Image (tube, rainbow, N blue to C red; front, side, top):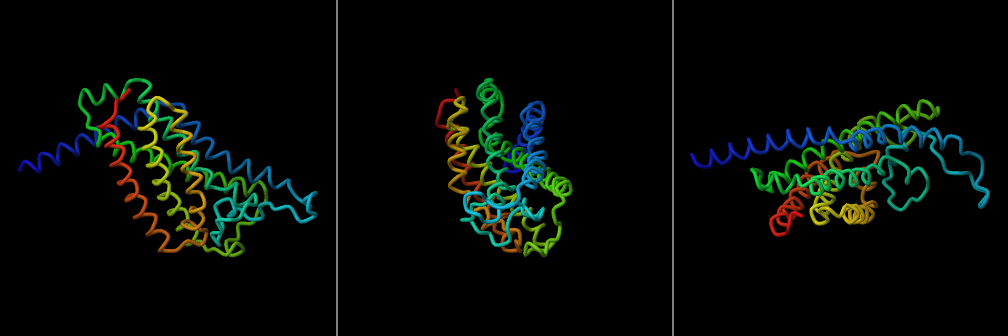
Length: 262
């Protein structure tokens, strides 16, 4: 009976915390700025790079540019070592944007004194970490969806090919690729959340730490979420993302419990 009460209390606390976090997030201008960037960025990239053509003046070779709209989503080979414009300026840039947004959102809680007041009055630190992870993951999923829409718009404006077979992928592979990318974002959300609890009011510290960690993981993204992703990629990301988030969430909870909230 006591266990049921505790479970019910946890559910109520988490539901309340989720409502509060969602309300706070959508009153922040930063969330709308990040969502707008996610939509506009692929349009600008695809339209602007469509003007690049001819040969590279330094090498005499054909300049690398986008020939297919799907290159803005990824590559079928999952080549992590490629350094051309199509591999560097694609949807994977959003992972860094997600990390920055997490730091801005959590950092605002510490700067405003909201966190100290919250823990003093009612909330538990584990509820806070779990709620933040869920809400920020939902926001990151929205950013990836908007980027995909923006890529379709930009590809249409630039007159790029929409033929999935031309890039060695399929419609199912692209769906699996997007699902994998969305859930892989949980890794970046949890890392940034942990570093934000370390940096607290020092926003610059949490952002720099999150971007540095993101650079170390950046080469893993093409391999884990290729354009021709399959069931294995989806399983690894859908299961691995939450497991990774749970592990770092525990670390965040310990940091909040053992350190000062100011």
